[in-house]
Length: 501
Ligand SMILES: [Zn+2]
Image (cartoon, rainbow, N blue to C red):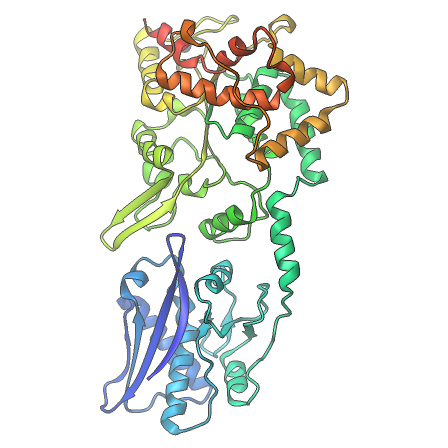
């Protein structure tokens, strides 16, 4: 019996797949076990034809290839055609052993790649899976992948076709293309990406974004504080005041991900990510299956936003069922998809951001226009936004259409001053440093919130955002209206409640 190995992605976990081949007596031909029927048929024909192109004919004996574990195969997110190379290699080895032809078989050899009928290897859609295999399999001795390949490890060998692989295994030196792998530089780059301050381009983008946002100082302050403290944030106000526009630029204010988080994100998205936190912006027609994960076992928007932002524009327009489905990941940071084939666990730690109008027409609290909605429809609208869901937003900010100079609060003024004094880069550096480091210099000042009549949860949330405000605006901690102003960044629930009555 010969054994070859491959790997697939189940949820965000790498699973090792074992391919065993036995050539026995009898005439039952080529049997492929462990795969769904349709995949079996396709793979059998591809592999058989590719082997024939190489001069290997399946003998009139019983060739049995067993692929497992079956429970992992059933839940695979990786196309199963990527197992072609491993299946073909396993059969070639078994045939060589049978005919007593010499072939070098490394200890634990991994393969990935789909075969063409001529035996050529097609490019893989997600190489990162195979990068992650090295951590799971310390005893792995060779990883055979289609060339060219960007991955770097001394155990990686790349091939254009099956024949090239066979030629190297038949000669003594079995190393075809050895990728130069510099461990020191790899470790260095890992360390750097962990605590690197953002580069010039990131700072320039952030500067541009901040200057644009400052046309509405309250929006600017909300976004900056939310970015630093990773607070869930909802902005409410009448239409056309720039709520959605502000969020579209929000990713520019976020610090790059550390190497560990970035590799988690890469496994979810199955593509390379340059350390940018994900920003997902599903439309309100999005179903609950698309939001949290569907029947196909693919990750939903909440998982795709892991370590980043899930932004729902016009929150009240989303079906109630979809919003309800978000409660579990918001509390636990994980999503469990239960399907007939088994359970899959997906991570979903995201920052929840949203915008909303206060009523269907949008002008309920407007100073400029009268609301045209009938009371029952606006009550219905607000009901959707009240209760447990609204509670998930640590920051709930009301944005006025016109923010007169005298209405700008102490934080907005401090921001404007930063720009006037040319200290914007210092401020942005502080913004990114606070996101990258957990040891913040300022503790929460003693809060006396009794007079605000807040719930216990409300007090807790105010404490959290106060900590962020204190570290982003340390010069204002001693200001008389420091705490009162912070409370105004969590007043939406109260405002909506009053409208109800
Ligand atoms: Zn209205």
